[in-house]
Length: 221
Image 1 (cartoon, rainbow, N blue to C red):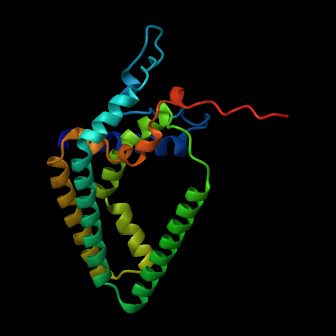
Image 2 (cartoon, rainbow, N blue to C red):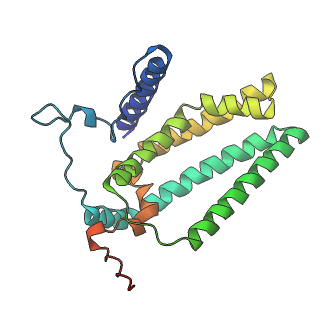
Image 3 (cartoon, one colour):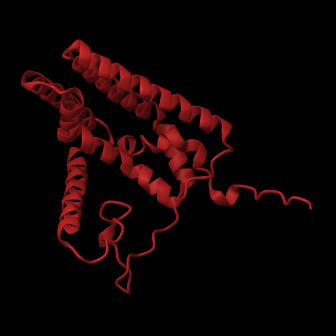
């Protein structure tokens, strides 16, 4: 499992580096969109173009999520506990002014979350996930893992936002490194299907086959 995760992380890193180099040097138009899934750029049809992917078996995905639901929930709970532990350790090293900034950011995030939930509750039901959206949700756990393992960006943002001194910077680095080590150990012990389905499991209500959704009734004039 860890080998697959490292391959995914390296793929994202290499693609990001190549894209940055292109923006810096190229005069031609922007690069074409990145592949929807890791390794898909190597799948080609007879004419040299990417081969069409078969339709996604939504029923099979739903059945697998239902089967693995306890493991998926346990994995997510452990990740959330790791994040909460790291946040508590981070808050403990802040001075009063930095803590005020932290509390303000947290309050803003909670307000946005509440507003988003209210909008979602008032909005009409969202349509079923497209095949492309399903593919992206399958890849999202790898993207999340990348940022937990490669935490330099998080460290730099903390230094910038909270004006951390040299001692605090080393403390934050140690906190993030400890969280990374715990996360890697968790991923190593997590079966690949459970890991890959963590994001999709939160959207099971939108995994229904679009062909099974009844067409809206025609409105009379």
